Amino acid sequence: MKHTALAWVCERSNYIVIAIFIAAILLSTVVAGTTVRLFEELSARAVRDALEQNEQFWTTVHSDGLRIILSGEAPSESQKLLANSTARTVVDTTRVIDHIKLATKMKIGVPDFSAEVLRNDSGITVAGLIPNTSNRSYLISRIESIAEDLLVVDLLETANHAAPPLWNEALSYTLTALALLPQAKISIEPGKVQITAVAGSYEEKKIFETLLMNNVPADLQLLIDIAIPRPVITPFTLHYILDHTGGRFETCSAPDYTAQLRILAAAQRSSLSQNDFCVIGLGVPSSQWTEAVEHALAAISELEAGSVEFSNIDITLIGPPGIDKQKFDRIIDKLKRNLPAAFLLTATLPLDEDSTNDQVAEFIATLSPEGLLQLRGKVSDETFRKTTSSFAQAKFGATNVHNTTRIAEGLPGDWPLRILTGLEALASLEHGALHVLIDNVIVKGATYKPDRHHTISQELSDKLGDSIPFKLDITILEEPKVPEISDTTVSAEDCVTQLNDIMSEQKISFEPGSATMTFPSHEIMDTIADILRNCDDIPLEIQGHTDSQGRTAMNKQLSQMRAESVIDELRLRDVETASFAAVGYGEQHPIADNSNRDGREVNRRIEFHLFEPERSAEQE
Image (cartoon, rainbow, N blue to C red; front, side):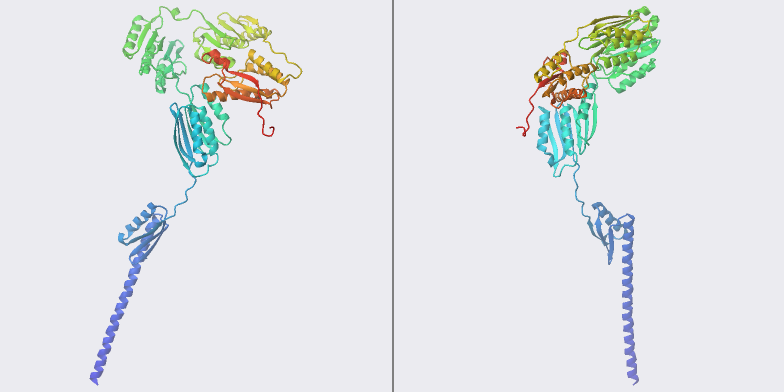
């Protein structure tokens, strides 16, 4: 029995040991699993924190055993790479599994349509992106017709999209501008055109700007920048005078802005007494022009008076009267050593003060029957010289005045008053001359107005007063024959005949490069309006013609504007113009030789012709 009990106890003990061993295995397994899960969660959390610090909130992180799996939609490839790099700085590289996808790209919108047209003497280049609805082949054919014999380079690309708002308007306006401008860069965007161009003169610039602004479509933004190239100065001149009133330039030329500043600075050191400027232009005879001018002005400053004049490389220096001869020679020798080798100096010293002064103080203005005014003689200073030119241009036309006056000292204080008063009197004559002297003011000329002699006399007396004597020699001309205007209605043919008779005796004229009529033309328009009021509703074509100066397209548009200006003036005079048409022919029909000034003046004209209106389909 004891043996049996002992066996039972032993057997029971074995079961307990086995149970304990199994329990221990189970416990270790549970602990190990819990530890691994805790480690996985800590790794995933660390990766999430690192990604959030980089503001990569689009990422999703979860663990699978020891693996860290990244998922989500990256906004770009670089963001995807950054997410992987961030995770691998936290856990081992082999544990990071990349399941990230790139986000779906946004749908491409309408392209940014734009184009650029370049035109110069060698041809026209057009480049950019345009919608295929713009009819590329038609566009290029239009540009080729504008280019005429010039080369056209086509660098356009097209996109299969409809044209954006105001694109076609901008493109059409560009073609109009391209036909007008000989040298330009035109940038085109929907609703916007930017033009950078070059004009040959200030007058041409104003014409370009006027025509461009008149043709711009509504709502189209237009930016215009028209430059005027530097003029060619021949000869390249400079004339500087230093006397008791200070220094001043009669003329001054500089090749560029830097040279201008250097010359004016040298003049300031030589007692320049007024704010002067140098004309910047082409044609400088030597690259050492500025250096030569600086040395010459320094010599005048040392002499304390005198004048120096440059004409290309020739220099003439006149010293002040009374200066010590040895001092003069020493300064001139120094100047000769300092001058660049290309320049030739002639220096003289007058014997007395009177030898540098002009003998006669006078001012002369002559007005030709064609309206051309020439000014010569003496004025008191440069400011009044410019004032005289401006006043004369306002009275006689900007392109009709030629000013060759010179500055002189010792003129009477009322000299400017005499000149301006005399010019105003001269402006009321058909042609004549003004002669201003120290002791007299003489006005000669001819006029159609019998009362003009009395009017001019009264004006001179009121403005000059009793202290300045004046003399008038005015001839009264016979009034030009004007066709008699019948009180009854006349035929269309007779009306046109009367109009053209007026045009053969008188002329409708305009400001240069403009459709604005000159003041005398308004009287002619009054006569024309009186004739047309006695006519039937005639089919009248009012034709504008120009000379051949300038580009053909520009002349045609200018003549059109002038013909339309005539119709506008007739409307202001209550003339019925419904049956009238304005047509600009530009330079197409010359009636005189364009190679000389008189011929060009004749070709700039307005003509009146009958025309047969085109019938509409309903009338047919």
